[in-house]
Image (tube, rainbow, N blue to C red):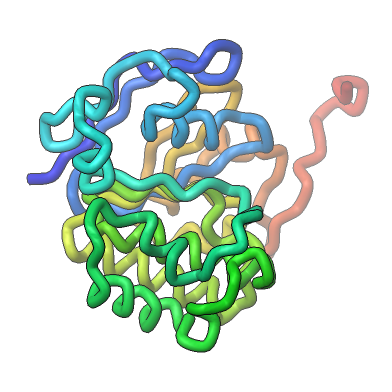
Amino acid sequence: MTLLSARDLAIHNRLHPTALDVQAGELVALIGPNGGGKTSLLRALARIEGASGVVAVDGEDIDEAPMARRRQLLSFLPASRDVTWPISARDVIRLGLDRDDEKRIEEMVSLFELGRLADRPVNQLSTGERARVLAARALVGNPKLLLLDEPLSNLDPYWVLHFLEIFEAAAEAGHMVLAALHDLSQLDRFSRALLIADGRIQMDETPAKLVASERFEEIFRISSANGRWAIRKPADPRSLP
């Protein structure tokens, strides 16, 4: 069975030593306050910024894998959608492959409905259109592990739902998907949720159990009332910073 095993992951002043295991088929949401460590955890798993620790996929140490093999093991989609290169969207997708595969590229063009955009310079596309191109690049190599930083940002409602369907299909096919989110209304589409704050994984639960917990309300400073989120008022107003 495909397995992500991470031990002693850390980034100085941003992510405390962290351990994490993920099984094939899991669709994992990373949630937490701004600056809590979601991006740092994803970047540490992707072996970016010289993060310490060990990350293995199916027993293969990512740090020891050649670059072509890394693309087969994992891909990382950053939160930024900025692309300054004046190259075609199709060629950006191609960058996710270790060898040219026109059939696979066309599958991604079709999946992300990029037909009329595929030959346009990517730096001339809208932010949402670039998000689709970059997501296609992340998936084109068919990696076992997908690390996605705010993949639903800058998308209209149709594309939010379509991206979620794509991620669910990847998980059903045996891939591991970790995605950082801000929109809590999408949590029920995930099989597992990690609550990250202060550079640590504070909770690891099913989405329903996590959102219903007192710890969730304490960290986010919100609560659910009549099916809506509301700011959680402190018991003692003098405790406000």
